Length: 222
Length: 312
Image (cartoon, chains in turn cyan, blue):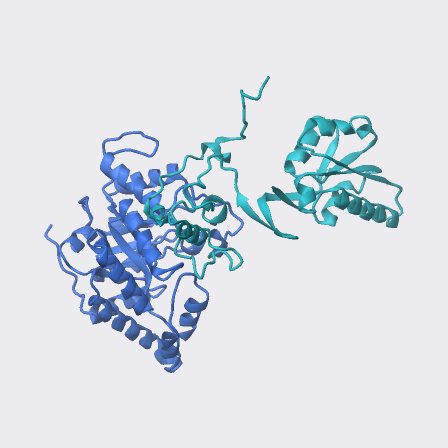
């Protein structure tokens, strides 16, 4: 899932300090799972902003809500009858949801309330780590189910590099060496022969290098 | 080692001599004279001079310009190229540019992550990795073709090198396998990471020999003399992928401070003597970090001076 973290309160205050009517819009999707931007976080942020305005002696209305998914216009449409009353919206959805909100309500100021970080897993509560960079051409079949693009700091396709030590990446002792993970997994699977085949330069056109991407599924389109 | 090139380094190796290379780190300024000065210190004692490419991710005068300068001094440069900072367009362009000045050696590297350097907030590239860069150079040289498929007439005549680190994770066998992969990609010579753990290096070389890989790639053993015990500790504890046994730290620390530099040179000489007897070692790559003036002494003491003259 998409992983995000709440933006610092000071940054959000900096955006909204001149507003008098504000909507905090959470999202029930990915950001709820990583506890960065669901209804619970929307309520907490709204309370904190109310306190901020009260303490500053300013009259301001701060409402909160959460939509099923801000990446789908049917759910965003649920705000259509009341969004006009607000000076601005703070969206706690991921960068996709924030942009979609701004796209659908193109006259409305929409501020980000989270920093969107990566596609990752919940290792445990409050601990998330990256697994996929959405390069658009999956090679996991060749690499024992561990992605070198997402998990090697140098996205090497013929690793590990000479900085790998004790199973850790040269960038940080907190980062497992992606290629050691690949090696161990290939060993477990009895596929170590894959390790010695040089992998040719990757075609990055399906990654961000090809420009903003779009999927057109003719089989699904009516 | 397949393709013959005009590289003097390749000729020296093929003639059966123990090759000696060393390196010059370019300055963090536009002062090209520094390159000449450093190259002049070592030129009579080595067969080729590597020029590092923004090593440890610290921005410096570029390797290509420094290599051209060294070439114009009548010396033999080895163009180090890391894939961290440039994509395949830029790297192939630089390879063609280098070849147009008669540069005949390239060392294909992935490069340290920028996290270590003076621009840690930059974007990296890593369009290719070191193995893929070697493949690319081989394709340009042997097929006269760019990665994009364009075919051209005047080919870069490059002797293709890479690094190998027998001491990095997860184990020596994988390090041999990885080097085998580089050899399959076209690598003809290797300069190893600095060797301090002789046992691990010998294990690595035995595995190389057992697979016959030592006949397919020329291995130049990496030597970095220690200046003092502080450097030994730093390399042991802080530099990823370098294995400095405790005994070496103790030995460096066991002599008075003013004698430590001498001890470091003595240690390097002893290591080289031992390495001369290891099957598959075809020469030395001396990385005297900001200590280039010691290279002549090392080469003389190890008995590799004067350098053999090749027939023109």
